[in-house]
Image (cartoon, rainbow, N blue to C red; front, side, top):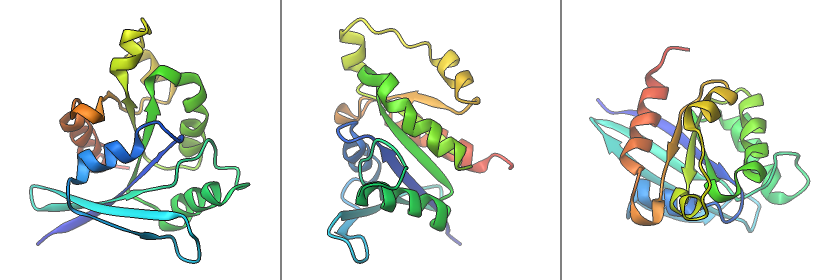
Amino acid sequence: MSAQHTIALAGNPNAGKSTVFNALTGARQHVGNWPGKTVEKKEGTWKHGGVEFEVVDLPGTYSLTAYSVEEIIARDYIVDEHPDLVVAVVDAANLERNLYLVVQIIEMGARVVVALNMSDIADSRGLKIDLPKLSAGLGGIPVVPTVASKGKGIDQLKEAIINTINEEG
């Protein structure tokens, strides 16, 4: 018997959300539009141990304040569809700007894992991110460094997703 979990990917434009989506789902994806909108909707799946994970790539947005179509779609999906987990894809080289959205998602009560994407660019700029401190500052949620364009950290991200979903609560 196959269980299914729904994972939403949220993040700022150009944080690498679609690259993380492609790394998680490979060729197992469907592209369409959000109902009544011209904004693209991408869905895909990946499987682990007989469990299927449906991955929904939300539109890129800087916040969930519901001013733009993208913000409304992202907020409504998180509130109304109650995904099992939200992966907040964050541009490691622009951490401060990206964390506003992460905090909003956490405040909505969603279970969150942070994919600290493009960590190679942050490293090349001399930015040192204290992962345990960042995780603690976000309430103890997992923070996983990734370079999705090179497939780095994707296995660790999947592990964090599975572990967070399997936690009680």
